[in-house]
Amino acid sequence: MVSNTSLLNLFFLLLIAPFIIISCDATATTKVTNQANNVNLGTYFNKVMNATPIMPAKANYSHVMTSVCLSPQNANSPANKFKTNKQSQTELINWESRVAHDWTFFNISADDGKILVIDFKQLDQNVGFRYLANAHTQTELYEPWSSSKIQAYSAAMAKIRAQNKTLGANAFIGDIAIADMISSINSYEQTGLSPDDSNALASLFANIAGRDYLTDLFYQEWLNLSQQGAFFRGAYGPFALEVDDEIVSLGTTALSLETRYYETAIDDPGYLAYRCSDCGLTGNKPMYTLAQAEWLKRLATHQSHKETRHPYLEQQDVDVLFYGNAVLSASSPIGGMKNGISNMLQIAIAQAISAKNINNDLELAKKILDRHTQGEWRVFQKIGWGISETRSATENVVLAHVCLPNYQGGRAFTVVAQAAIGLGSDIELMNQEQEYAELGRVGQKMQTNLTVAMKKLLQ
Image 1 (cartoon, rainbow, N blue to C red):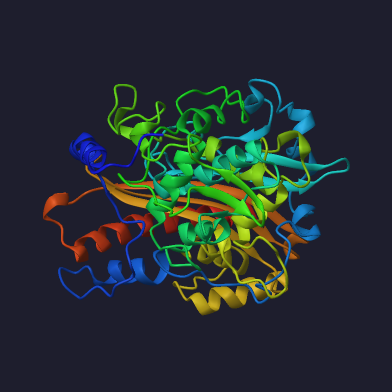
Image 2 (spheres, rainbow, N blue to C red):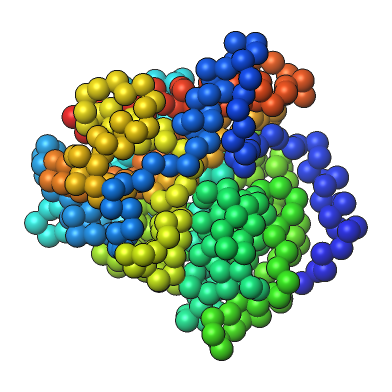
């Protein structure tokens, strides 16, 4: 393992400097003043996008996949619209063409954004799935921003489990609990001893996993995608989190990370610069909705669908990803993806099931969701957004798994959505207020798309 010297860090900064893009994922919530007519957009960004998520009445329920979420009756959708993994032969190449699908299900133009939902329904033999998209956008590449951080996490846990199967998300790296790390990645807040630097934490996971392995998981190592173009070759800034003791441990069991991971991204032979010759305008972590949705759907069904399990991962690793606690109980604090920032999707779902325009009223959205699900609804989400100089656009990505017990006999689905809007001014001349307004603008576009999609899905 190459030492983390100042010279290497300086080299890395010089290497990426021409291609730095502005990411606002970890921006602290700050009140935007009423200037340049941006106050409404800034307020939306603070209140809805960059906000702590509302929680269900039964927030500390202890299982990721409850029986009502695992076996959703989805009473309004005919069974012949769904196929099981066995029927689709997901273990074989070109499975994407065999799944039950409608790539034009949502009436949203490609210019307005991309969305894909994997809908669940309990069939006689097993849970069936249908894949729903808009305007054939399911394989169109985009930059996932921070929504891809859960992929860095799951691949890192797999690499650790492969070395010692008793160590995973239940363990510590140095003196920091991995469960606290993934909670900080999603909430952008300090959790236990884990810092609030989501980018540095996620870069550490990517360095543990290795970019070759992260990329191979899209193909021969796991998802077996036939559509090329998705890969994970980047990082989240120049520096990964430095831990005092490079050891993964749990009690008396320990695994040294020395020689087993890359201390900086450029140490990894699988790393590529943001504007590498094969990267194009979508950068060094390009993905598409079908790829990201399938990754999360398989994690969400890890317990019940052995045939599509993430290599080496244990159910506990998924529990920690979703809830941020290695031992789930009624008193467990909520973390992980359950505490992922933003309320855009929650608002869209509440409006769909109530047929009301709740006008970003979070208290009303919570009441609606609690009433229709007996307080057991779940939104496990990871949000990504940023302002791209490369594409001269502000962009937003929502990645989530949703459980709505008791609604229409129980609903469950995985959703990925992406939206972009062209910049109205030079990035270098923007102040913070203008950045928040730009992010609020693309967020409202995303809100519109999610509202249209959830209404169609849950009607």
